[in-house]
Image 1 (cartoon, rainbow, N blue to C red):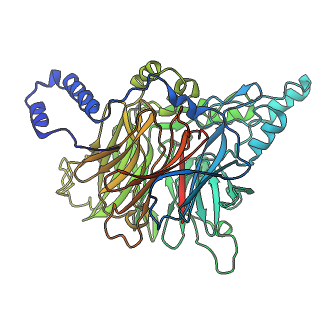
Image 2 (cartoon, rainbow, N blue to C red):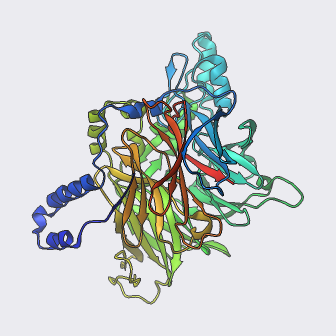
Image 3 (cartoon, rainbow, N blue to C red):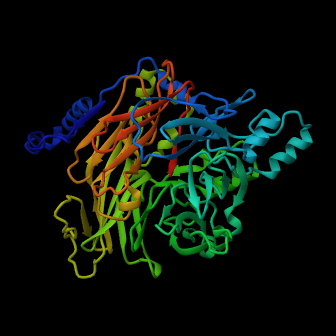
Length: 569
């Protein structure tokens, strides 16, 4: 079912202006809560979402789906998705949402028929865990311990060897040249066959690039060039961030990864504490990197390598004084623009929506979470598997989500201090030059509702990445539980919502119609889990314009939570 909603009415906004400041905050929260209820007040007392976090078996062969509705005749290809599928090994459990072993999913659409297939990625982490029937390699929130069957001396030397870096590539899949790679956020990526879902090769990016790891959200140019960012050791053993470039497919059929290069380096605000980075922004001419106050304490990290028992999560900490920094770099020629020092208040950031240039400004749209505390602290499986009322209580304590627009002025040399440098007529975002040379940013809020997140954002990427745009599509998280698909007009703040009782969708991927002339002319593809249904797993096809259902392809199997993926025509 599709619904259309709008942002707060003008009369409510005007009413706020007349209120004394002493009661403004409390009143705002009450009205926003009521507005959120109007938009998406959905309860899940049956706690069916727990099925998203249960182990499943891989399939021996693709299984046919039962189709209802009409799938557009032009839609032929594969929806590829990554996520955790194994949540325990033997008597040992994985503790965090991002710890379960990587499972690759595929819905094939061909000649009006749909099949579903899934296989575990045969990473070192998976193979060794299955062979030893225990957790062997430390994951984000789960520590690996020495084999209890070894004698005390062997166990002691195992501790001294330290922690191995995981290759558990459960986060995303994307193309490099003519190949496809399943990825996480370490230096290891895994080459896979998108047709058979077979695991082909483990690749260590450290052999080709000076990075400790890269994000699972690269940017791609139309010719196939891939850009990404990761932290590294810079000058004087300080931490820094490298933006890297992987060329497109080579005429001589050589591996593009072997021709990767570091394009430029950005400084870290703290010498031994790089910020956690999950994504970045890119326009035709610039890169935007947002340095958030969630930090990786290098000393803690190295200690974890020296003695086992620590996890990656143990190495994160918050900087309560830095706020958030925006770094700007030019693309060609590649260089860090050190004179542009942008600052704002603290927030967590995982996903950029889009970034574009307009009239001498760079517009940056983000899915933010307010404050310093790391949102991942609330994504332990024990929390997500709680009964609904307990899930809600935990989400109330967590950072609150907000879709924001920031505007970065490029010309800052001739402006007066204390003046808003933003002159774009369509935004209320501001940028004010301070006496120390920094520019303080205040955002325009595009979407906000208490404990109602717009996350896992997607756009018409092939046509509008780095361009001025109107629409983004996201997964609606209700107290961290995915229960709706949302379309947001970033110009008008109008929203459309698809939801269905006791149904749990995934990140919606936009596929444009052939020859489309409108930005939202296409379909959205999402995997939906409906526990208790005769066929609980399905591929949902929505009209991207109104979020009305066109078709769905149902299979008789539960599909665990998926994180990110791609559509392969």
